[in-house]
Amino acid sequence: MARTRTHAEDERRIYPLLAYQADPIRESVKWLGRKWTLLILRDMAFLKLTRFGQILRNNPGLTPRVL
Image (cartoon, one colour):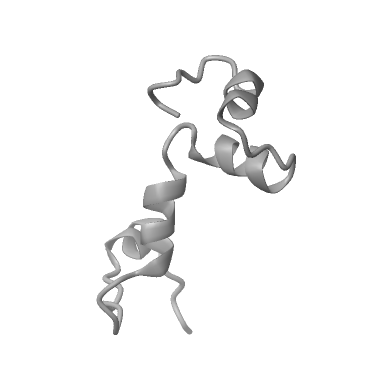
């Protein structure tokens, strides 16, 4: 009878290294994971805000220096 793996065994499992040097998903998360990045991209892509002042006004708490 086959034995099922436990959660602890799954946690210890080692996954193979990727065949390519740059992991595109990891790189994307690095950039998109920053606090304001997704909100700014949302404003530009979906709300079509392109001017500095528009984006700044649409995101309370975002400072000009950060933008």
